[in-house]
Length: 223
Ligand code: ACO
Ligand code: ZN
Image (tube, rainbow, N blue to C red):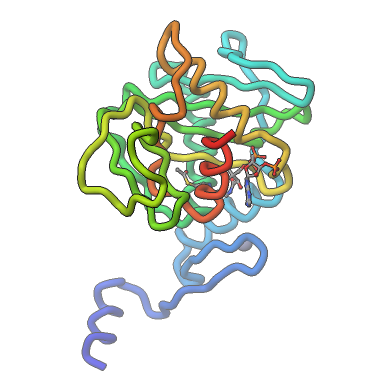
């Protein structure tokens, strides 16, 4: 009882308690105007997707029959950065992640998959890393380096292994899944992350994968 009273005071609001939206899945506090605003915004983006108008000097790094991949770097114009932030917010809300502050914000590379309907339907956020820990609860899991040397049944390791590129987020708009958009994003990342070389799957690591993320990563790295 006492702890509950304390919580009310700490939160500084009369009504509290989480509401889960049945259509967009976001958890928010209905009595908190700021939360409600965020929900309305997320709800709309979740159902409609994020529009993409494009800009003159956009960096198109791959083109396909159903869309293209644009690379956004930290020093790009503010409208490009704003677009990336909008997408990241949608993704984080959907995954229920807290916003993660990157270690080296100016080394982040963001790849956006733009559909022919001019919507952002996929996003991959990558950063340089020096090491990864092999997390293998099943014979699937995090893809980290040296998989040739480690048997597949290897359980979680506390030995860091060298890696080059960490995928901190990968996401595809829910209506566009299973159309190889994630696969094409990772292919493009491997091609563009370091100038002049194509990264092997051993050199990339998926951070903190969700069940969807694990299924995708396992499949991707074995084919
Ligand atoms: N279940 C089983 N297999 C899957 C799944 C799944 N949900 N998703 C992908 N795969 C496998 C399949 O074998 C697929 O090939 P197939 O369709 O020919 O069978 C192969 O991976 C390639 O899949 P893509 O079509 O390229 O993947 P997609 O574009 O659908 O995107 C993603 C996959 C990004 C995981 C998507 O499901 C998603 O956005 N999920 C919600 C967000 C999320 O969980 N992201 C991962 C977070 S972890 C992280 O960010 C590091
Ligand atoms: Zn909603």
